[in-house]
Image (cartoon, rainbow, N blue to C red):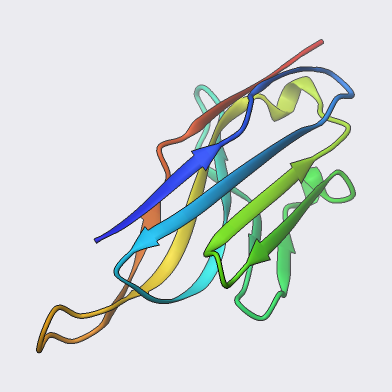
Amino acid sequence: QVQLVESGVGLVQAGGSLRLSCAASGRIFSINDMGWYRQAPGKQRELVVAITSGGSTNIADSVKGRFTIGRDNAKNTVIVQMNSLKPEDTAVYYCYANVIVSGTTGGPRYTTNFWGQGTQVTVSS
C-alpha cells in the first residue's frame, strides 16, 4: 500500500546537528499530517514535530527552538533538522504520515497512519 523510508545518520556529540528525512511512496492519494515521534528506552513514544499539508507545525516543548520540520508535498517527503542536540534526545525516531490511500479499482479511498522503520539517534555527552 504505502511505504515510509527514513534516512539519515544517527550518531552525534552533544551540541551537534542531525538531519533525518522520510519519503512516502505507494498508493497515495494525498497526505494530511507528517512528522516524527521518538521513543527512548523505558519511555512512551512521544510526538516530536509534525506538519500539516498546509505547512502548519506542531513542535514539542522539549525541542522547540532546536528542531525544525519541513515538507515537500510534491515529493511526499518530510525532513527534521535537529540542532543543539542533547543526550536526552537519544531515542529511536519514527516517521509517520496520515495518508489518504487511493482505492484499488472500484474500491474506496481510506485514511490511515503509516510508519517508517525507525532510526536510532544517539547523542553522546
